[in-house]
Length: 120
Image (cartoon, rainbow, N blue to C red):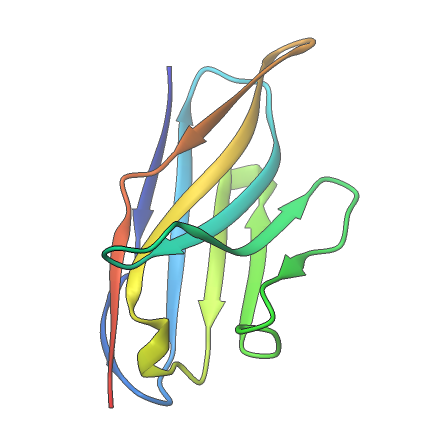
């Protein structure tokens, strides 16, 4: 079983920064891709940023230039550095990972979510 545990959310003033972390644990051979999504009540979950092995990161237009996705493969941990936060960034942020359980077998996992609230 693979678990993703997020941390780093909280309350911050507009213009501030937060760094979210997503730590993967369990039995697997590697993480092929990691992504961050966010969701607000009544709206669909939207992709914020993603990065896959051998590919450049992709970002939603609304966060380009402000957010940076990265990963530490040795720690099986992904990060989302969020700078110049805006009130419209307020949401629950979810980590997602495509994990190789063994050769030719992959599965997709979600974290439990972490709340980010940006005050104006």
